[in-house]
Length: 308
Image (cartoon, rainbow, N blue to C red; front, side, top):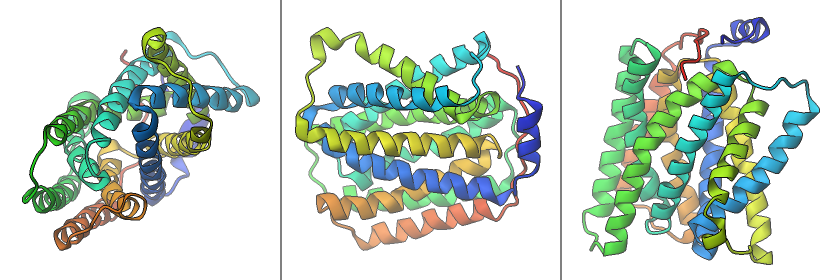
């Protein structure tokens, strides 16, 4: 199923730079969500955090999907929603489990293996031709991450918790790389309101299965952070879907590196995590990579077919 004529018209009238800027804003919103999620995970554990967040996000996104014109997705699109929900669920569990055991900036830094891998997955699975600017942008960001992690981990005395947290984050990056490719396919076949509702509905279904053994009531004082997390999550999803519907994945993926800058600031402000000079140097390279991607005159997105 291809995207509608109306969506094609919307894509044709959008400036090539705008999707990059919108995607960068989505990264800021989702980085704030990560910081809020870390607070919840430390308080009630990763499973209960993602379980209750999925329930609340499903309720809110159902209202958003229901108020406008809506059509039940065709089976290939529905299968794509479910597939991405499974991958996102794996990302959430592995990433936030590791995040509870590592500083925010270090966890985000490790996760930047994903955008580089996703560039090549974009070529393999979406048939995109990887342009030179996109490769240089990702390499600049990756070098920045290497500098930062070398500086922060170089003198650290690893505990078993740190090692397991690092492994969990690295596993999450593999799922997240595939998630970025699915986001591109999904955004071209469905509107953001539909994506958010069906993805969160599927997530809620998967997370409720072990609820009889793992679920616990959320303390009253944790509901406000949960509402904030849900609002940030849905806002980031909407912005990301809008951007991926209008630009090739290779141009949007390098904006993921800007998350480290936000993680560095949020980790320092909320958790007292220190910022070293190597972190600043690495962040400068990350920003440079984003600027290279933004200045490379991205090609507008073309319709693709659902393949699942």
